[in-house]
Image (cartoon, rainbow, N blue to C red; front, side, top):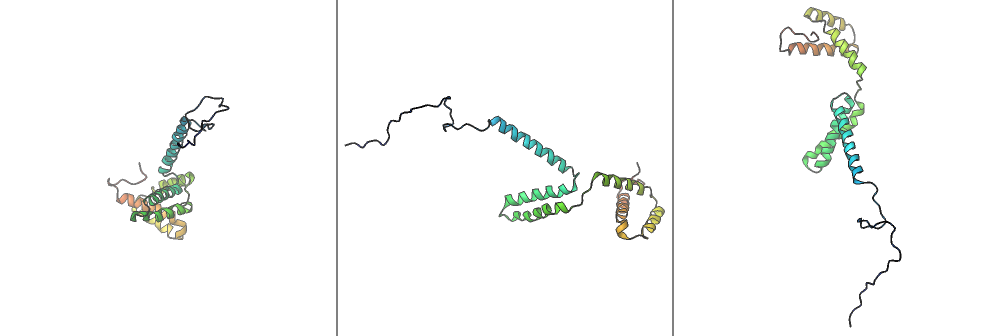
Amino acid sequence: MLLRSHRRNRVVWSSPAGPARGTGLAGLTPVTRPGRIRRFIRISVLLTVMGLVDLARGEHPRWRFALAGGALTVAGLVLGHNPAGAILLPGLLLLFSAPLAPASPAADRKRRSVLERELATYSTAAQRCDLEAILDQYPDGVTRELRGILSQQAMAVVNSPVPGVHPGRR
């Protein structure tokens, strides 16, 4: 005696109205076409690269910390349990310190460049001594920016490859 097969012949009482698709799942349609997804990915990558180029220029000082922190954090997560994964902590510190960095808007940069040009007119040693004597009469908190600019200009004169060339004069 032979065993009967558990399969039985099935009869389809009603068929779908549309043509059969090769998806393997009856009644399910794809949400979007593959071309739309590829286009979305291309546009997203392009916008991301454009944003990162703007950040890499360094126009926004706060974003420098965020960009460096993000890179170190991702590298630390990827390296994971390796000893090099210890860069995760500095990355997180940079990410959390980014909002604390002082902003430097365009107006501040413009004001500072005007101040640098005005201070560059004090080019001789006697003029610098007179200006420093005037600055000594005020507290350091008030004259900190002026002293910083003067010291940068003095270092630029010392490190200048051409003798007699002063910063700010063109």
